[in-house]
Length: 319
Image (cartoon, rainbow, N blue to C red; front, side, top):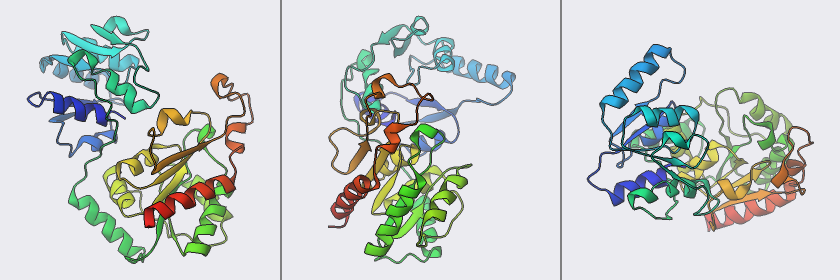
C-alpha cells in the first residue's frame, strides 16, 4: 500500500535519496524498485542491543524528512529517534512524536490513498494509487521453470487461488472455493494453482479435500517476487482478502476477493474493472462485534455470486 506514495515522492523530488524501513519478507517489495536507494531491515525479533544499534545508525544517517506510513508505536518512536527535523505521520495518539501530523481519510477510503495523504506537507497531492512491485528476470525464469515442472502448457487456462488468511474473519468457506475450482476445471479445463504462505497448508488441504477434480500439485512456497512472476502468468486470481491478492493487483492479473469483516472499500482499488470485491453486510459491519458473532458477513456471500463475478473477470482476461 505504500508503493504509490514512494513512487509519487520520487517523481516529485527526483534528486532526493529515498530509503525505506521495513522487515522481512516485505523488504523484497523494494529490492528492485527504481525509486528506493536503500532498504533498511528493521530487527523486529532480534536482541534489544541490535535494535539500539539500528536506531543509532538511523540517527547517524541524518535524514532530512521521515514519513511514518505505519503509525505504530515502534515506527513513531523510530521517527522521533531519527533526529530528522521534519517527521510526518497521521494525527493519532502518538502525534506528539511527529513535527507534522495529517488527518486520516481525506483522499478516500482505499489504504493506498491514505498513505498518499502523508505527502501533502512536502508538496505532493497525487491520487495515483496504482500498486508497484518491480521484479527481476530471474523471478520470471523461476516462474517459467515452475510452470514447466507442473506440466502447464502455453495454451492452458491457469487460475490461481489463495483461499487462506491468518485471520478467521477473512476465511470464506473452503467448500465454496472447492466448488468454484471444480466448476472451472470441468467447464474450462482450467489448471488450478494454489498460493499460500507458511503455516497455511491446512487451509489449502481443506479446499483440496472438498474438491472432486484434481488441482495442480503442491510446490515449494515461492518468494514474494516469484509469486508476482507466477501471477503474471495466470489468467485470474481468486481468493480471500489477503496479501497475495495485493500481489495479483501488482501483477495486473484480474482478481476477485471475498471480504468478511474488513470493508472492501479500504482494500480494493476504487473504480477498477479488473480487480473486484464481493462482500455481504448483514447490517453490523460498521459496528462489528467479532468474535461475538457467527461471521454472517462471510456466510452471506454465496458461491453463485462469486462464480458469476469470477466468470465475468475471466472472460475479460481471455477475450
